[in-house]
Image (cartoon, rainbow, N blue to C red):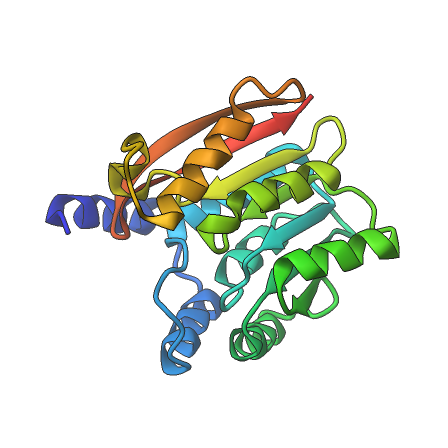
Length: 220
């Protein structure tokens, strides 16, 4: 890891993301529960929160909960009466997430659905779940194309779609990569490229979590 990247992240967080006891406790709880340390950073969490506020979102879908660190950041940016549905494969991760959500006092705002995300999304379709204002895709990368299809299904004009980990340490430029995560993200880009109903771009990021980036798009 580049020490300069880490120092800059620390500086940004110190200046623009005031210390938050609840979010600090969430990170500690995730570590104690042996969750993988792949949460967004604090400055990235605030970036997501600002997107929610800029959009004025009241309904958010998150695909990939982990311990609900990013979920809590976004929930705090919701418009009054807003709600998040977040999908998590692992029952263990989901239980940790629910405890963290309770710690943040957001049980009435965030609904955690446990199980295979594609099955959960199909069930939501059967239930007639309404479209969302913002959709955050941050789960297993080989399924990114499938998640994008569902994101578009649960969108309407103006819906913002955000995808995390779309640079993969620069590996997405390698068309010969045999990594299914890289190929999943490349197919994700292929689907977005020239899509008649989505205007999108991606930004590379460096920091304490390494070299990666976000995709952000809006449904036309």
